[in-house]
Length: 359
Ligand SMILES: NC(=O)C1=CN([C@@H]2O[C@H](COP(=O)(O)OP(=O)(O)OC[C@H]3O[C@@H](n4cnc5c(N)ncnc54)[C@H](O)[C@@H]3O)[C@@H](O)[C@H]2O)C=CC1
Ligand SMILES: CC(C)CC(=O)C(=O)O
Ligand SMILES: [Mg+2]
Image (tube, rainbow, N blue to C red; front, side, top):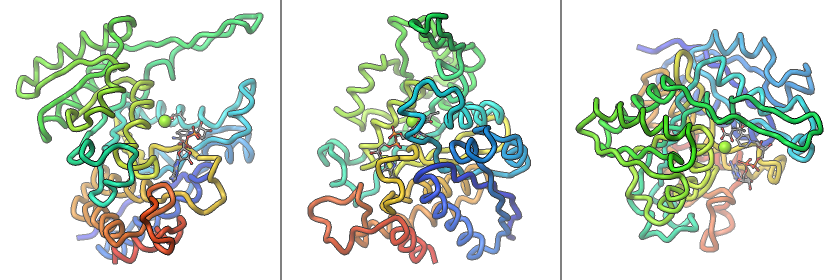
């Protein structure tokens, strides 16, 4: 029996607009093929929303988000703000606010290497082969949400790194539950040798670990973790870490999968699920029609699985991406010198190939 669901699409800025169109087409195709009824609405966020309303997250978008069964998001950001740190209203505030308002405290970032992309990474194939990591990035705490201050003379600034026990507990439990379904290894990443917030983090993870004696726990400092990730990615199974460290480590980990354009994510917590590529609005390639749409299409796969429980449909999308890569098609970011020119596709041609394999 088909399911009936309401999906809010928030394309955002830059390549967010270009790639989210393909994530949406995946959902439309799945609905048609499996006789589900998905209704779509659209919301504004980021620079586009500031231009239209003055607010990076208009109340209308937030209300639509609250009333939907799942949200597919693209990316926000504009060069204008990146190059002018004095601007007070900024696109990123919209994304941070929606994460907080919807209680999206757990950001799952699977690092999945498709077999045919073994040569796409700048890391040696023998180091990469078999790597499969699931990051749990805490998403509603840390320096991103702590108090921000600037002195009257503007010469001193601070962002408070703050964690509460309950915030660490709930993300740790989710990570341990996931580890139980995988290789039963969990690595908690912090900077407990220096930071008090990290010492709380480690203390709480050590407590939660007692509930999961079947899972092997390792604690690692962030600087070491950044190195180990590239040295030997296979040593990691589930990684749980804070907002800032998780943001940085997963951009690094995207090189294990070949490109930023390959990594999807799911943000979950108290209510509706929110799905987005891990990348940003990529000013350097915006408008060129070359952005990789696969991260958005794979975010749609996560949405089908996690928010709607449609596992077969989700796997179908992953198989279509895999088949497209097996056929040799590549966007610029995952092509190499051996890729024949006519197999290097733009955003729309790549999206079209995946949809052909989905039908
Ligand atoms: N979740 C979000 O909406 C995020 C937004 N941002 C914002 O995005 C803007 C640009 O930030 P950057 O630091 O440049 O990070 P970015 O993730 O947008 O781009 C980093 C690099 O990866 C490449 N890249 C990213 N996605 C790609 C794709 N789908 N296909 C091919 N190549 C891809 C870009 O061309 C660029 O060279 C900023 O305004 C930033 O604040 C940054 C990260 C996350
Ligand atoms: C743009 C930021 C708010 C966050 C970010 O880089 C991310 O979530 O990956
Ligand atoms: Mg990021």
